[in-house]
Length: 526
Image 1 (cartoon, helix red, strand yellow):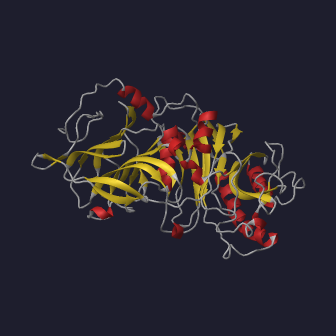
Image 2 (image 1 turned 90 degrees about the vertical axis):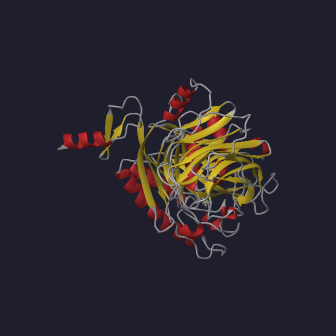
């Protein structure tokens, strides 16, 4: 019976489409784990919030509310450990909540010593520092369940008023991630740099590069929520330390069509060839959901705007090392040997090859075979003024430009449907809810049949579209987005750079297409 269970587990294991499947396994807590893999968990938490976050309360009352959230955390740590998880990640704001003032959040803040690096075990040494009750509880969860644990909490650090940058109340307040080892030791802390309308917290003087080591997957980097859109610290951290595993607590409000949580988390994983363990908060009425365990070529996600309650995700994923090559990377090496001649739409689906006709201006192919230019129009998307051209007919070749960026699309629909799609371009500074420079080529489903609905939030689609999308992007930092009906993810057949253009191609999406986009971040122009 034991042998049969072992064989069954082996048979259902995914091989990740590598040339050779690993044949060596470990059994941990009843789970068969393959060599070169680890078991990760993330928990999307519906936090218990203070009904009056702006009211001043005593520390005891704050600890009582946070204790109710920590009770749920403890249950999920135990559940993850029973499934063999070696690391678990919890969301931003999950313990204390949000919408505090600077004064009202103070009773919810723990103290963390400035230098720790594994020297302090809050569970075993609770007497060393005052106001560390939350840290102690998290540390004991890690210790009791022998699991690495990452959580987000508010922290405080006293300062002298004479010090530069010291606030008038004599303390810094930070939005902080902590990483605890399986023995409960505090390994690392990261103080969020890119705050998102968080008046209760201070920004650290310099961006922090936080990471910690594990015996099962090497080093994990750590940053929070809005950080993912900026060079510091997210990109700098990954590049400087060559990190391949990321833990990512977030409290992300979804914004379609380009910045839903699972959509961008997957795009970041693919763009930087890293694993991401992303835990979001769950408050559907605020548009907050979307967590997952991501590799560059596969994801395990949760997005639910309909129901309430938390969700634990546990998955086994491969350890990415410096020499790890994804299926996409292998494809792109192969593609470099292809010739550059352009093709026409003569087959039932688009060919794998991508070509760039920079000297021509593609037009729409009408049903009579006459080539004519579709009208361009403007519509607001993501609070930015995009220039669009519509997709008309069963197939076509389109181009649309703004400033220095031109976007191109070859497409073929599986069947005509009563849905309007458009190809949009934006090349400029985004200034709403943050300031950052974006270059974007986006194929999106519109909210209705009029041009003014293009750029609206849409969650369902039926059209299956083969496409090649490319643009002459000026930044190397391109995030490939591919979102399908029901806020589900799909993966490109091919992507990468060719002839100074970045391309994304897909033959037949797995469900109706919502968004296919190249989302470029030109960090130097922020």
